[in-house]
Image 1 (cartoon, rainbow, N blue to C red):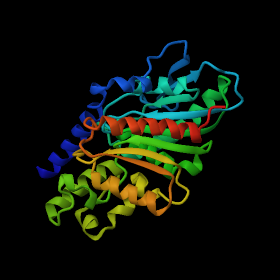
Image 2 (image 1 turned 180 degrees about the vertical axis):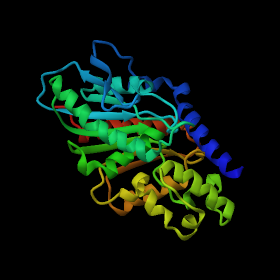
Image 3 (image 1 turned 135 degrees about the vertical axis):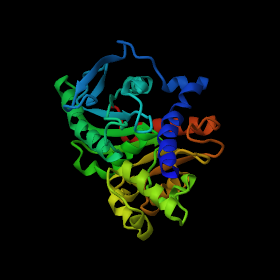
Length: 316
């Protein structure tokens, strides 16, 4: 019962928590949230990048089509890996397009009770989609020569995996990562909010079950005990891919997050520091997963995102 409860609580909480910020937008945030209109450019919906029902992306092309090169910004939706849609981020994508970027929201196959989808399979779908996004922009006359990738919650986790794990295989250089409250670590010790740090058989069984589902791998309580599990989770554990070549990153986390582990965000921070990554880490000290109680910190995070976009994905 404990094991099933942990799995249920995580999947539900991750989805619900991801949307709590959306319902409480302060007035200043309207700068970063624009309603799409044809005055901004051209929007193409539901372009296929694969054979799956969810294998679709929306492409936003800026009004100015005269430049030689364009930066691409991909923003991945939240929803606990089980909910959400690319259309949820239309206002953010519209803001980015209005700044002069080619932008894209990408759907990925959500996990449900009838499939075995995982963070691993979803990350591989994103990897499959990126070349198609760039190819389609080229078809419409927008040559993409560099990109940034971002997202919220589950989308942030997938964005980090692409930026840190897959950047070397990207069709164009990845210049920037930004996002908020995405799990970057799957070390059991970091998941104390679910009791997975406890030295008991029950805790290890729960850890093996939940992290195995997320990683798309079979884990056992013995693997948790002897530590061999972590190498199996490396493909989804963004923090394990941070090194001296990691792209500039702007992230925000809530100190009282009960959905994804705050300890994991501290491990990510330490990795940034160890490898001298150009990073900005924002801690919302009064907030949980929705970052709802630290408007000034959240505002500074968005302002810094804009600064890093202007610095690393300059619109020329």
